[in-house]
Length: 260
Image (cartoon, rainbow, N blue to C red; front, side):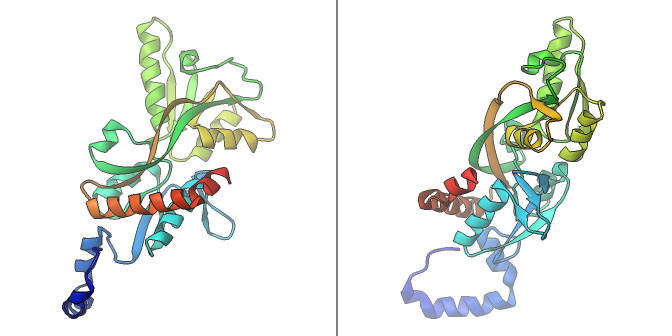
C-alpha cells in the first residue's frame, strides 16, 4: 500500500468503505492477486531449497525466506505446489504472485518476469559412488548421459556443453530431462544416467543423504543469483519484497536461515 497522512483519515475511511465493496482495487494497488495473501508457487521436492515435511509444512531455505518476508509485510502465504516449468508461465498468467523455488535469474527469464534476487548459488555435478567416469567439470561430460530437471538451468549447461563437445569432434552429451529432481536421482542410482546436474545446495544434500551411494564430481560452478520471480513491471510487489528482504537481512534472520 501507500503511506498515508493522518489528516486524511476521514477521506481514507470513505475509500476503505468503497474498497470493501470492491476488494480487487486494494489488491491491485498492493501488486497482489488477493489482498493480504502472498500466493507463492514452488516445486516442493527440492530440499534443502523447498520441500514439504511430514506435517505438510513447507520447509527449506526458500520457504523460510519468503515466510519471513511475508511476516514483515503482514501477509499470509498461500503455497501452490506445481511442476517447475509451470511456475513462470503461471506468474505471467497472473495465477501466482511469486515463484520461489531456486529460480536462477537469467537474461532469458528476465524477458518474461522480473526478479528480486536474494542469494548467489552455483550448480553441482553428482556421480555414482567413487565418481567412476572421473568427471571434474562440464568439459568431462562428452559422451556421457546427464539427467536433470526440466526447465532447470542445468539442462541448458549440459546442452551447451554438448554443442562444444561436437564442435571439438568429441561425442555429444545425452541430456535426459525429468519433471522432478527425485526422478533424475533414481536414474543415476539405477545406472541409466552417468551424472546429474542440479543446483549445488540440492546436489550436496542428495550426496549427504545417499548413504554413500553418490559422490560430488568437482566443485560448484556457474554461480548466479536466485530470484523471487514476479510479474513483469509489478513495481508495488517488487518494492515490498525488497523492503521485507532488507528487513530480515538487517535483523540477522536471513543469516540464521542460510546457516540452518
